Image (cartoon, rainbow, N blue to C red; front, side, top):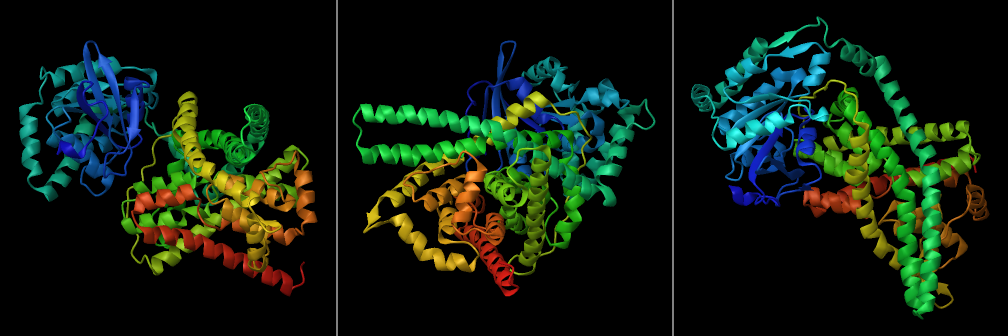
Length: 632
């Protein structure tokens, strides 16, 4: 069985599984024990993310494997299957099962399942500090006696109890401590009858929890219940979600301007020196143009435009996740997705798409039903990703707000942007329902939605984790596809056929079709060439209007608006460009991720065609109605 799993640190000590329910602080325990000595990836043939790292306690070395969070080991999802297979594999020598001290009863079910599979188990009762604040007391010694395995109380964020945890692990690995034989025999006998086993384990879990938990405060969950009454109530839940969306967008818009300009200026200065260097070594002009005007300009534009908003948006998103709010979003939207024949967990993957649609596609792994996972994949592109925000913000600011930099204008931009996003969310519901009644028929599956306790976010780790694990990861994938795109764009703009470049000829050819959509050939060509990365759509558009042979950026939005108006833009052009930005094909990075997740060319094409057809049809209808009623 160990042949299925490939570890990078297998030879660096004893291999230990780290298991637990979601939201128990398992990753915090892992991070504290391994520090920066980690490797993240997937095992061959698996799509769930796995992290492994090395740790040393006294003179003993360990390879810790952070398994995906699961509520059980019943193999109903790939996460559960991976966790179960690895714990039972020849590689895993012991298992640390991490529990939430504030929700011990629910966590004990998984502990007992793991004890049925392995006789080398250490139970880590984490978040003991939060339990104390809520007046929850756990008799650790009694719990250890009842389970028959070592039990250690920890507060991983404060590094409390982790040394004791590793000491207990030392003793379990060396077989100095063994599982209570009577408990082992009882658990093994139960395992023989699966139906009886499930109910019996739940009843054991309840009995044990009642025996070891006491409360010093009568209403220990009072704060959480008060917040939930506000954040999940029918009258207030949705409005608060929208308000938070506006706030997040406003902070992103306001905060990204200065660093984006600074990066653009820095890359501009570097570009000057690189061009001077190219001239000094007598580099051929065609090579200099391809490298600098093509590849370098596109890459610098993508980085300048993408990195600052992502460096703000992803930490804000992760802070909400750490606080415990995102599961409430799923709770609020669950009935709407159920009515659409989809899964409530799709709300979480949809939120991930705001940062990057590729990340949202990867996030669909949390959906167990293959049918509902496909619905989430096909519709994820209807929420605008970070790369589409610059297009939306620029056009909204120029045509509907005004380019003056003020609190009121930036807030109005955030409101209009949030309205555009809400339109995308409503489209997600409608399209999900359409898919569930046609090519993806089926009944919505039920699932357990945990509302974890509210917690104070770890600001430092959130910033580091969100920037390095999300922002830079997404940026690196965008750079990989943007570099060759820059070369293609430069070639099209510089290779002449007669008196016109290839770019001009193609733009002219597609112009009649684009006019039916209320656009023009230059706008549509910018979207087509922006397929590798949406961030380069605006620069390509400018390049087309100015007939430049390289990417070009304006110093101000006023100059940009003047150029657009001179080339025939009206309010209708602006509206249709916003709509087509919302409804058009996924970028190449997202499509590649879709293919990797579905392993199907068919569903990759469907994911491409559904938003594209929606965008073309919507803009054509809007244009037809505007001309019918003489609005332009």
